[in-house]
Length: 410
Image (tube, rainbow, N blue to C red; front, side, top):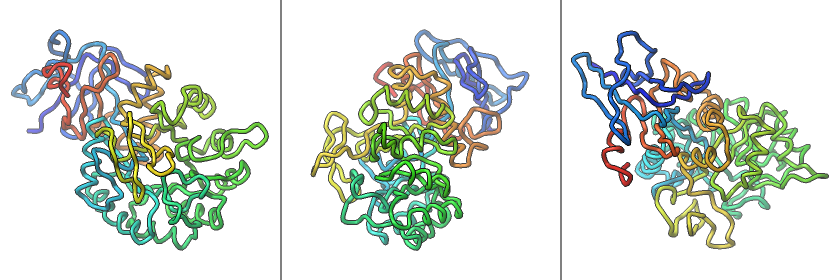
């Protein structure tokens, strides 16, 4: 008999709003409808969750404190590494290390991002990652580079950059064997608009990023089918009063989802507020753009072919000092959005779960706590610190175990 888990007592964030003293019923790997006859709640121990043992009906009740939150599992559409590992290594072992690291921080669905490399190497990486997509460990592959602007290449190897020839773009898409979900490119480069059209025709998200393009060039890319702004504001010209550049074009068009890296390094809080205000909460997607140091610590790390030094949690290229991705995890992005940026919880949930799910075309399965969807959820305490993670009905981090372990646990 498949055990039923009943989570009660906490605030539950649903698409319709926040339910105080709510409950979520998990039946096997999915979220069940609110059913009559299910136990309402158990007793809550002081300071933490209490899990009641399974009954003869196979029901386990987890009573959470009233200041806790139950939110959908996080979805990261742009992540390169974590736990000392990298998707660009092109091996299942390192990819699984990255996946495991970010799952422990609440990211239950993620797209694997590559960095600029030789086309054959990128094709090999995509082929290896596609197997993990087919197994359900990843939601797809994102190519960031090599079709980007030299002046805005950031932590991408300049010698390997190239114009987005549609034939080269097609080579990478084909190498992913149907698992390519997104490609970041600079549409102002020769072949850029044709490549955007090719991606759109093949169901791959065309993202504008690492671009030196103008306002008009960006508008042309959107008309050609681009629908994402890769880490908006970063690796592109700033917003100018005479030359508004790509930022204005990407913010103003309702067809575009804008990625934001909310780590306190990539964006000032006022800029994040501007993006939410202009784009609206339904068009923002929080991402990590994390490299191998996420969940690991300071030190030296590879990022593709580049060497990165992480100091005080900030990743910079050893040569030149450019910011090289982040060490962010999405639980930190969530907490910062609520406690520092003062974004309402419901809007943060949209940016970190619902919007990415819709963008990827998987909102029928993940992205909210609606009945019938995968039981992917995160439990946060009253300070918005992660204390529990469930994926497909299985606890990766149990709130009951976290409470028993005390502040140092989990």
